[in-house]
Image (cartoon, rainbow, N blue to C red):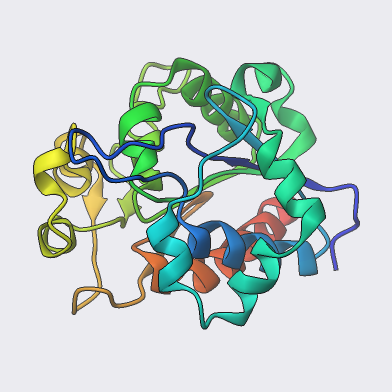
Length: 238
């Protein structure tokens, strides 16, 4: 059991519009609720940050999708948690303070595709955390936030790393490809990451490569949470 003063930073989106579609987007309920609940049970305190700070928009479709998921409904009904998500920190606040966190994580939803791909503060916090021996991770569309993370020697964090994330096939299946500023699977491959996916669309897939943990989609969210905890424990042994 980790002690309660250990913190994990969740970097969530501030973006609530799906391109020109007129549809609402934001952070995906399951991909925040599942890992956050698991990690809280392991004794970590979750801290939330977003590009704009303040209220992080929740993808309404993800609430409907998880209406029968007890973990998610409990999480969304928790007034303390909702207060945190309504008052997220600005990512910039944590530049230079990365050592207070055991991990920096990017949950998914389509929102991150619009405001976390080229986010300098998020990339800096993530790089600093990784270089300080911390775990970094992302699930579903979250890995877009890792694609431009550069280490001190100038190399991209994900270059040569085994990763997963929302697949192009899945994006096509949900009909959202035409609204995406970039395609996650394509971008991961372009930057030299070694991309893996589940045998079937929507299958659970979690990939651990040292201190980099990625999950493919919503069904991977619980396994992602556990894998992050395992990686943090392993990092402490070194």
